Figure 1 (cartoon, rainbow over the protein chains, first blue to last red):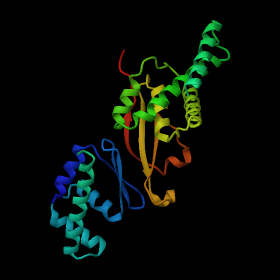
Figure 2 (figure 1 turned 90 degrees about the vertical axis):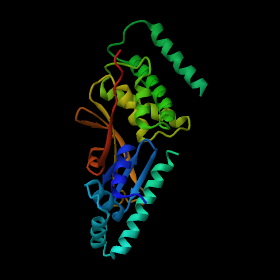
Figure 3 (figure 1 turned 60 degrees about the horizontal axis):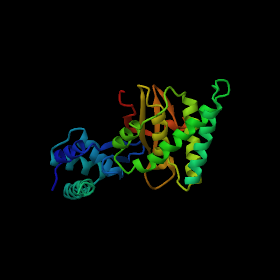
Figure 4 (figure 1 turned 135 degrees about the horizontal axis):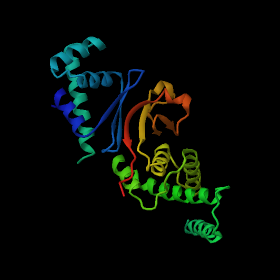
Length: 95
Length: 164
């Protein structure tokens, strides 16, 4: 499973640009990979926190759980699924 | 399509054959600029299959690009080129137009292509709503000014010709 620091490195490495929109959603622009990834509210929150420097998985899980009213176990599961999914989408364009 | 280009070239030859400068009406210059824009637009439609910085660099390296084109003239030529491509069954999107216009103006030092997005509630759609525009200095072009605030700039890429 990819961790938050690795995700930040992945985005940096591939020049993927985040844009956070007024409605709380966001977009990841992957110019090299020719793709635009739409982020819903929770995904946008996660990416924002990670890019702000939140590297500790447990702290991220607690913040995410508090923000969206989840148990920390559920938050951990959602975050792991999101990070893996995002990594797969980025790497798929570079296979 | 070939017939179209032959027709355009004959028009161009006719202008040269006329010989005299046309400083007062500029019709010849407009036609030449439009031909350039169509050429760039045609190539831009293929170039966008490359990563954007690669496409921009490739277009800016084209030979024979016009110099010191006024922004309104470049904009008109870009729109004409989009219409020509539309007649040929090639829909021109904002990114194509941004590539054409920025290439026409790329002998300037301060031309950038911007990509931006706006939130779905503003756009009234489900999917991502993106837009491409250019700036020359601080001046945004290819953008309805009222809409400019709605798009959040995501990234920008310089359009600059290589030094001769």
